Image (cartoon, rainbow, N blue to C red):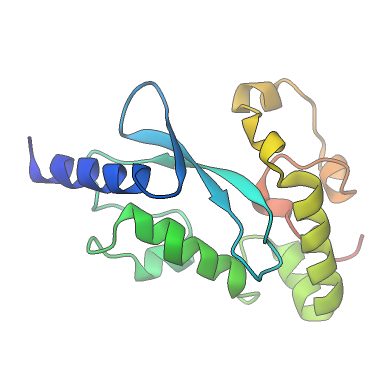
Length: 167
């Protein structure tokens, strides 16, 4: 067994033995879903999300899609750090000057109280444990337009958690 493979196995096992619910995909260790709960005492408290994780064969080398994590990522961190430190920090201290969701960032800068209300509303509406059981294939069979998402009727991604700046 090569060193990256041992490291991957160790990190995944550490994550599985933690308080997180980890669901392997295709009985492998390279791809799995993790049930992530919003940080306590935050706008996201009580929210639950299914985070899809795909590990490259070269893990722990590689990159992470979210720039803010990628900038500070180092192979010395493990998967548990992502769920215990990095993701909660993203939710607790969002940076509207480098947003993943431009509409949410705009709303946050323009009207922080409305932004916070929208986040709480979306968490209440969409981030419930019963919502995370929907699979990608089930979502793909439905026609969801941009108008549906921006009107807050339905969302299929985390990109619109805070809604549009001008609803």
